[in-house]
Length: 327
Image (cartoon, rainbow, N blue to C red; front, side, top):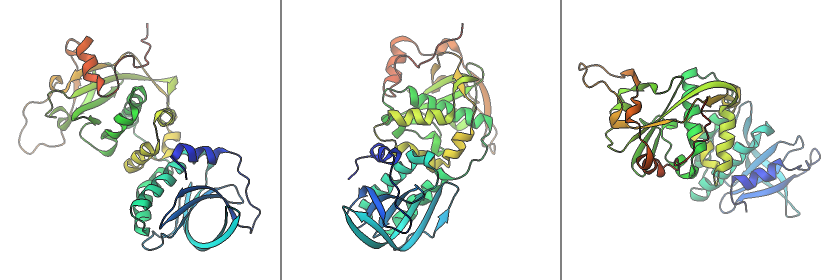
């Protein structure tokens, strides 16, 4: 049995020997056993496939995206431990080998979910969330792209990325971007140091020790793209499945990340302020909602020294942010 998505990815990137046409599929890995058995095989055209045996009732109807195909098979012949079997199965096929990492994570997520609730309805729920990860690209607005870059860059700098990822709320539409041990961390990334667009809901977070991490970044051919940051974060996690699951819930596809070709680089070390010190609109007429405004942070109120280290410790962000200030 496989331990995690990284181990399955290692299987998928090896030179797998595909079967001859019209012969049983060779099983190359087992993802789960029990009421539902999950096997990874390789097709004659070298596409990796996940066979889900024993999870038919309530399964979603067949579908196909540019990168992923799901189908019901009345009979699939496969070779397992030298023996040929032929059984009904749900079949998930990866159509683009470059997406082997998120596909491996999806297989492991299905294995975990089906071990807890062995039913086709579980397959429907998981694929309903994850199929967006394999959709075609759509354009991100520049401000949204830069904001996502800042959150991913922050994750990439953390010495405890698993912990920080577990508290990532901004990707799911939360009021603040990260929430760890009851403490909020809002990440803002702009073109000018300390100047950011904020919403009234963000500025009004009732948390005395909540923080705002302020990045200034610029486009750079030497900078990091969204796709590169996702790869970097995934490589530092104990298991990257949670990262891909989070992106899928937000509707961020791998194709979108790959299509966002702009690279960004920080201009300087970030500033950190208490949320309580962020300028805000103190009063406005009843009936006003969804208020957004621009704030300019006061450098004199930025945290420094021991206070800064203590504030950032729970997020794994103490020390260098990997930034070389421009001269």
